[in-house]
Length: 407
View 1 (spheres, one colour):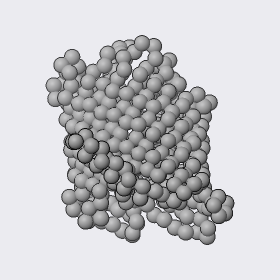
View 2 (spheres, helix red, strand yellow):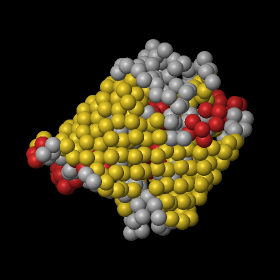
View 3 (spheres, helix red, strand yellow):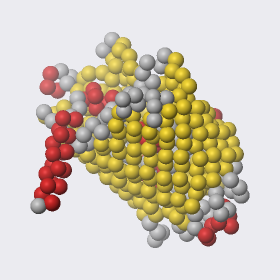
View 4 (cartoon, helix red, strand yellow):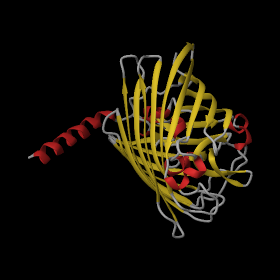
């Protein structure tokens, strides 16, 4: 009897999800990066304009960050993480076959504002700087973070077909990447599980085809699997040698869940191995009476490296809570298996990170929103690596945040 009640409740939720169908225009305006989606309830910060038959959208965010981290492997630095995006949408076709096309471009000045090709982040790994693997540091994003085109066509009453091609873009693998994720909007630093969960958000030669029926979406992508190289100003073009698929469920406007998997051909420049990546995530957003949104995410990622290496996992739970219309509390808890902390060794060490923070909005001038905040991270690490990192490693970041927002 209890199982029947539970199934009925689940079925009722899914039926309510049928009301969350999107027109082609609304679908395109809801995209976070590439073809990934935040919960539809999230009031995405953007500026919109109409120019003739075109709908224009602008988004952007920048942090100026001072980071202090504990020794012996910690460092201090002043740097800026940032990105800006513009898109243009237009109708194509007539009547029943009227669809929407959208062109988008995203740029970042991090190649200039993150000096020496990285910023300090204890236990972070992935990519390279000056020919060596980055350890305890996070790489900047490329100048060109996205450059692509979307086409969405309604083919039946409840069905959308979407096509996407990008010179630089985000294939159907993982959740929304952290720079654009609703629950990470007040966290300037990357998660430790970035290269398990969402690092393909800057990929090259990306083609995606997807079908959305009511509240279910299925997508498949081909793309170039290598991570960006150290020259952050160029476009690292390559053949379409990797692939992925993603199943997403949007039962209501407040929820989105996805499961995805892909094979990446030699993503790391220093490792001659392929990676089979599997991810799953659940994201939730609820708009409060202040008009701001409480957003939370649970994300899991697993990397299987070919060549007999151990599988490694990463788990993340993060949230941003608007205590008032101007006060935001943030939290991030991570558990990550790190197998690249020591050169020429592949032992995996399970690192736990606890981050808590606060942001206070200072002012809103027209479409510009400014805030100041800070967060503190503490780590729990295995005894085997405490002689290298200390018994109680920690990090502190103080930041100024500026972003575009509806006036």
